[in-house]
Length: 370
Image 1 (spheres, rainbow, N blue to C red):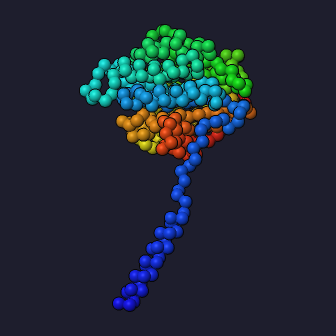
Image 2: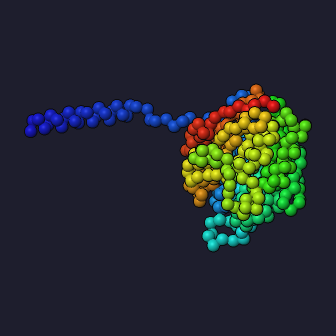
Image 3: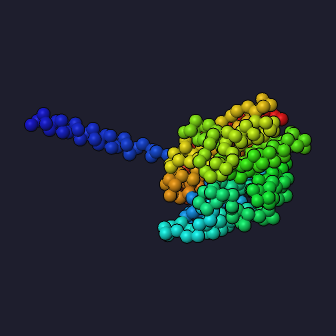
């Protein structure tokens, strides 16, 4: 019995000692939140907005998209934001009047939600949107009909002062579905941004190549913005070779063909930005990055950013509010990519989550000079 009491006493002393030591240790610290700022005061920022279809599809997510564009508005001077590029799939369904499910809004409501959110930037920050497969046809790219032009006509776009030219759409009208823009930035980057609709036709690609190869843009940093082009890290960052949508079957080009017919032969296109590929709550399935040399031997960086399935999958909150910030450095050869969520940053409870600093979401890359 004495032996048992001694053991019990020693155990009690050990527990008291451990408890006292634990209480003296500092609590685990959350990462300290740092609000976005330029890493170089002479740099400037381009903001990439992912597929917004889940933000516009569900009524309860509309406010998150408006929070994202409002954050861009409020930080336009701090970050020297020159332009905003949205990668397509603005809405989930282009032309559906009603659902049995009470959660989604109809297509009219989706387009109105997108128009309202991006309207925050009208006349303040230039933005460029492209059409994804869900912005065409009825449900998804059954045909080339789109309501995009009803809500984002040429005269509404705050990038109109930068607009070089509108290409013809499939109905012979010149709209922003295929369009080109020129930007002269604060530290001397001269940009040519070409925006192409989902599954661009050979005619669309020929128009884009002709614009890119004009003598006045020979020394510009060319950027192609289109919806479907590159797979994610989970897909080995490969260009998409084929898709089963009606428009692809009718001759619309997928990523590899876009590379071969436009990006590879256009000496000055050095960056491609796209969306389309996402995966439920899996970062590696939502982002991608690849580098290849064009026919001039210059490196072309290719970036996928589509976070729509984060925050609860494809029926969740639309993507946790993530934005990709591209900071163009004054050396005219370095771009720093960072990934930030105004949604998480809005509350002291979650702002420690506002930066994703994983290597696939925070990195820098160099571009070859013209």
